[in-house]
Image (cartoon, rainbow, N blue to C red; front, side, top):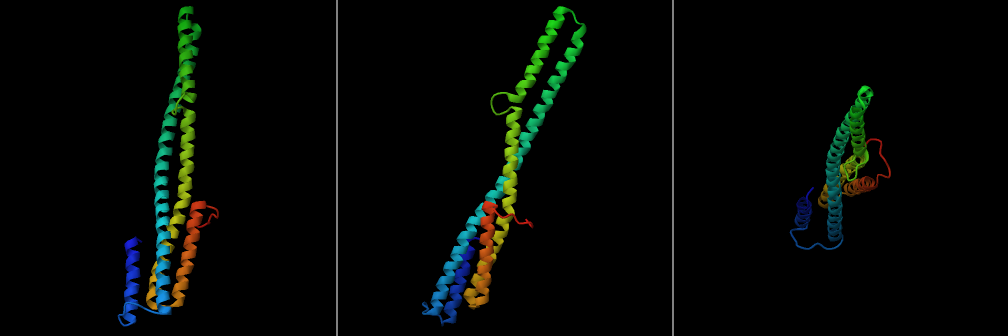
Length: 209
């Protein structure tokens, strides 16, 4: 629900109140207080809804970006693993083939074998951010962020829906002055706020989410 939609709801309720009071610009007494308090209540709900909507959007973006990052890092990690295995297999084959070689050829074979093994070791712990160790750590970190965002997202979705319903009911109350509708709105707002807080903290995991 956009801010303009909330404004329209408040304006509609105000217009209804003016018509009900004979078209006057000002209401006095309890009716005016109810109208003002309802408008403030709806505005507060709209502000909370805006925060929840932004949080939900951010969680969705984090979920998508972290999933891509984890996939890319794992793919790079697997490619380096295959390269490392190939180098070590080549070194082992040279060791087997070098048993019957003459001394000078044997020395060249041993040097090449050592080169292959060193290259394989560098793939494991080379400096910078692209060693197998670093790639695996980054992939797991991205997975953790992805899982955290995936856990948050449904809480924000439910909270957003409940707050929207609370705003709609509050606008209906402004028109009808039915107390049950106002209390229903407040109940939905409280549940929505609790879902939003739980979405930020994940303090109370809910089994149906």
